[in-house]
Length: 578
Image 1: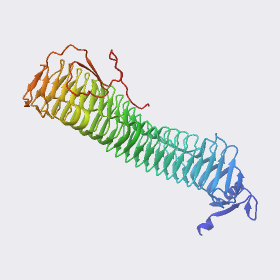
Image 2 (image 1 turned 90 degrees about the vertical axis):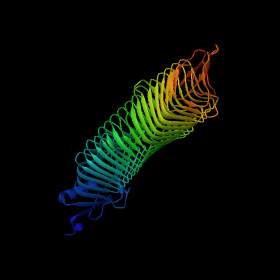
Image 3 (image 1 turned 30 degrees about the vertical axis):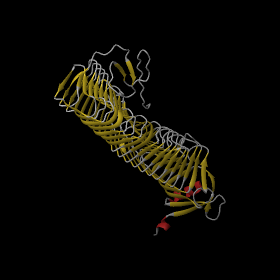
Image 4 (image 1 turned 60 degrees about the vertical axis):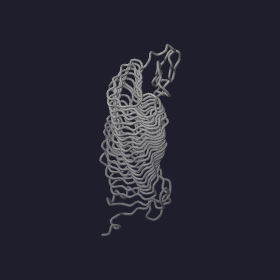
């Protein structure tokens, strides 16, 4: 017996006719009575009825998608149990308290079908069922997979009053090639479940376009997300997953991880995010590889409140701050390129924040690295370059501790500056073509430098003042316009196996508190005379000291923007809200 002979065929027409049924319900009853697989072909029209579909049944609109409308003023429009296939129907529900379409058990396929509701649940795949939506449209309601399995292909979800697609309670759902727009909350939410979203467009969601929470697993690839009020993609509550080759434009935050979440993000582009591109906080983690952040409104890559991301091969261009680690967070950043910002490229602020930077290149930013905080605030920078900085390549304040190894800084105002009670260690590094100085230490800060080369400074090689301490071993200061090394006030230290050469007038100008060990130079070494009693010179410095010549009896303000007769410290910090 052929397949066509095994399937009983029923025709529904409101106008009646030979061997026809006046409504869909009567055809369903006849099919159920025979107990065979049935195909119910429905003529165009508006049918006001509730469809209880049982067994192996196909409901087909005879004249194609949209020609058959089924609606109910109250309750569920279609309830299925068995193996049910719906093709070309428009199912309209008006009861926000009831599921418009519900799969009670078995499988349900909606093909070229439209579900319209006022709100609430449009399609509900109940536990242990399987629902497929293909080339279909859902308007205003959410599609809910609860402990079920599902497949969504080439569908459109418009103006959901809640989440457009919700995958919860262990459900497993894949969404491919679909468009989700105007959801009041999320486009797709995966909660304690498994979700795959590929090749989709999401726009205009009220909260995160894609959300993974409560130990969810979410896989995202080749998606486009635009005009989102919150995050483009968000992982929270110990969720896992991956995001590949996805573009987020005009979101508040591009991709976020929080509260123990740990995604892997690769090859994504985050453009014109209003606050941050990558945002990791509250013990969130994550590995971000080969991503681009373009034109972030506040911070391109932000780790805060215990966040701990690993970022590799990322490119940052335009925007305000490149990478910021604050609020006791940490992070490791390798192979990073940063260019054309309006603020600092790298920032480590607040108590106990810590960051490691390796193979970073910074071009055309006002400042390179800024570090400020208590003694637990640390930064390590290795094999990195800073070019064309308007202020300082590295500035350290508070009690923070920073180490630099293999650093090249050129064409700016100041190479390395450390003040207040901070500590800076520099090795195998060079500063070239700066207008002010290679390295400056003041307050009670400490600078330890080994194999430091300063070439072509417009004023000083190294400079110390106040009660700071400066220790340089194998330093080479070449073509410094004013002086190779200068020490004022009670600043102490030593120069070991150092050299000073070039056209300057003085090799070292010191205060008698410095040990000169094996100094190689043809220029004179000068002991400071007692300074003349004159009113102190106040130098207002936003990022690092700026000197055009040696200064004596000066007050240096670090990260200040308000100076009167009485020195007042006012520190500003950019950072996104959470």
